[in-house]
Image (cartoon, rainbow, N blue to C red; front, side, top):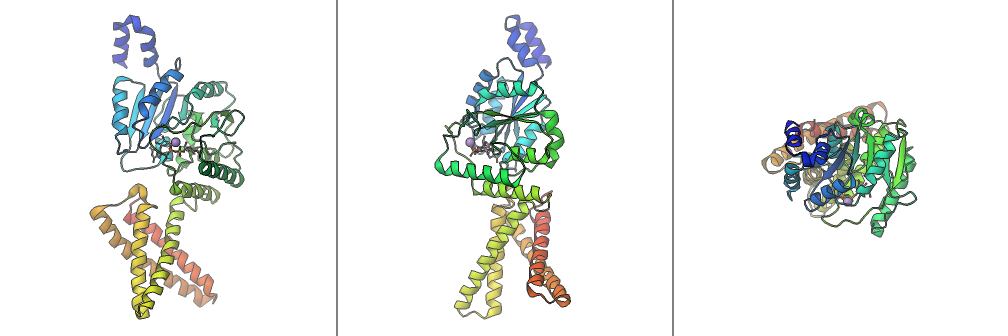
Length: 382
Ligand code: GDD
Ligand code: MN
């Protein structure tokens, strides 16, 4: 700041722009990035043009992209004080990146926007004007109101987007035209109290904000045209779809079912399939039943560990020696889980001789145990 102030004194001819930069930003544009090194410079240029006359800053939150996105951003930040980079290590997640960027802001207004130039930065001044009008707390850039469009979508992506929109509107009471939008601006004072409620995995930050606010936000929508991606590729995959279902379940059960647990349970179900297939195969090779069952259990447990490491705990993924130690503790935990399962089921069965109720309760107990211990001890999620 003091350096900027002295710059103002030393260069009176460039007085106006320098004072502009030195002003405390009124708008923070939060941009999550993962492998966007080819886009960030163009993005900052476009923001600069679109937001002429606004005191803005860009907070680019990068999850340690292997393509050097953070370095590219820091090179820009070195000559443009309106740009900051938050480099997060050992973490992944679009939503979490957005939340951290928004929390780092001291401006009155915060926007979230993709780095890949698919969102129209020219909408930002309009969004800001709507918020300053005082009638709204949140303005959503929508592809599905008059004047907006998502024509750049492939047929497949367009179908998925419409399906997710329909599900979100039916399962939640959110009546947005485009609840899947990743482009919005809000009053920071309206965001701050919600931050601790939000989930950090997945893409659905806007939907989460609106659900968590429980009707407490006045929302406006503004149309924009979703552009085609020019550089790099989309990170939306099947996992993101699962996260989306997990978010809805978590919100509907008041947090009892978390996306992580859902993923763990899904992996467990796949593991059961693997187990049965292996058991059948081993019996086919004339193994005695106990040996066949032991082999199937061992293979299913090992498979579960690697699937969970890949999916359920991908933000805490273990590799090398840590993965081997993790695998061994996972075996131990699963063994105790199996005992818990059998113990609980037998105890229940002694009281109430309904085999499936006892069996299912035992399996659930075992799963909850495994999940809690794996989360705590193997992948060490805080
Ligand atoms: N920090 C961080 N961490 N950023 C990420 C991550 C991550 O794990 N995954 C993706 N991003 C960044 C990308 O670099 C990009 O700037 C932005 O988040 C959107 O990611 P894309 O991979 O381009 O997503 P998309 O274009 O398929 O999806 C967009 O449209 C959807 C609606 O159809 C996003 O705006 C979604 O939020 C939106 O729901
Ligand atoms: Mn994109």
